[in-house]
Image (cartoon, rainbow, N blue to C red; front, side, top):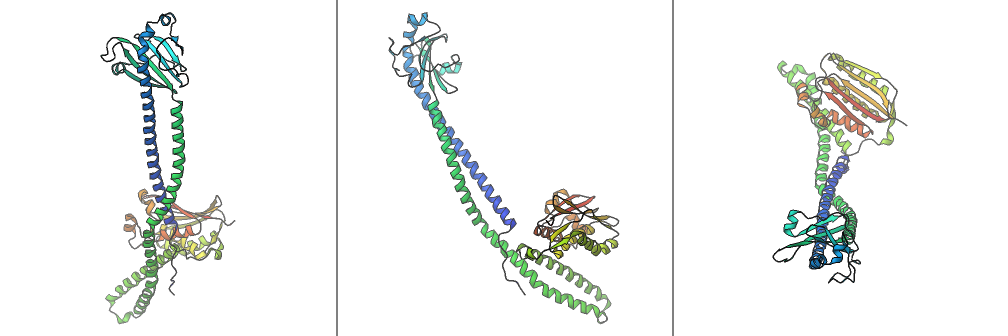
Length: 445
């Protein structure tokens, strides 16, 4: 009777696809956020320091008017290297609150020798004025948390006449750094909040974008299951009819009998293909036998049954089929499904191993897992094709040439059965040397 229950839409493949899309979206949005925050921070920091430089430049230009008076003051000359100007000095100084503003003003002669100093800051290091700065008359330097601006003072500033000396003005950047620290903190907090909102929005957008794909995939799985189910009956009728006709061969011309054999073989292959597709469709829909009905299965006995069942095929091709059970191992699962799993792998080795070769089946334990290894001396698999060997209906060109009648579903079914039993299949192969399939299944605890 046809089963009308719909398979579940969400499966492992779509979960992985959803997380990949969400991760890609988050990476792009985080990258955009970081770049925009960096640009905003750089623009804001540049603006703050430019405002500070302009303020210091105005102060330096105002202080340059006192340079000639300081040079002509005998107290300055008699107290090298420079004299500390008092707040109540006899000079016309328009910066009476320099100590409270964490600023300082320094005057230098034309030989860049210090003359006087006023303010609470005392920048270290010599006067820095390069050729280009002298031509421009302006130089800005950052020394730790002190910003300095140095200008060139002339006797006639408008005409840049006789050089009188230099004026260096300094101010602490603590206030600017405090603003920038607060900007970084707020930007970080805003980024965390934005990341949370982006994550929620990204999950919603990813789910919405995958809905059409999930619906199409659901329809495709349902079609595969329905078509496979519906094809079983007509194929059975065809096979039965051909068998009946074949038993009455005297009613046909002798030349027509091979045609009946071709029809019978084709019907048999189609029946196997339909059964495989139906099994995969049921596995996708998670309608396989409940795990509550699983039993403890000794793998030694199961593998002995597999080897005994396929030994005639190996003898027919003159292939040595060997079984090595190094340790006892028991797993929990469905016996028919596990038999199908290992039969597919061993049969795959027999099909692609030339005459006189060998297929070896071994059983051992590792890390609380039963390990079954199927090795053959067959044609092997190219390294670039290894990621695709478990895809449905995919077959390597070399495999198609070696065995044209294959369907490309055997390994896909083996992988689906292994994953359903909580295991995994890995493969190593070299062209012309052979392949090694390893199945790991959890042991009974």
